[in-house]
Image (cartoon, rainbow, N blue to C red; front, side):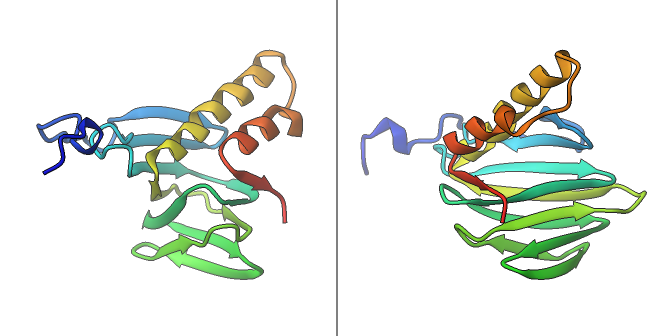
Length: 161
């Protein structure tokens, strides 16, 4: 067995989080509840629950992390590589690296979905994006591409189709 401390979990006791527990990140019409930030998975896995009504996640691709989405409740539309999918509760989708996609929900009811990322560091993107978008709001202006482009670049995201 390796003596490398980076291979050992940082916590030996289980952590149970209820539906509304976890770090909360707000990005416009979407609220994110971080359920696993990587601190108990040696940074290899992150898990967050996304909730929202009437939202559109702008087109992007990512080349620095793997991501799988699992729809818990509601419906989602996803355009991935030019093909559109209508997801219903119980459906899952894994996003290939460097393939452009967008996700949206037009309904009045809430959509809830889990997003698993590897490595967990990918969740830092949402934290930093929240800070950047919050700065624009505090200045009383809508966010501009220059607000989020540096954050996207830092985490290997590529905007647009």
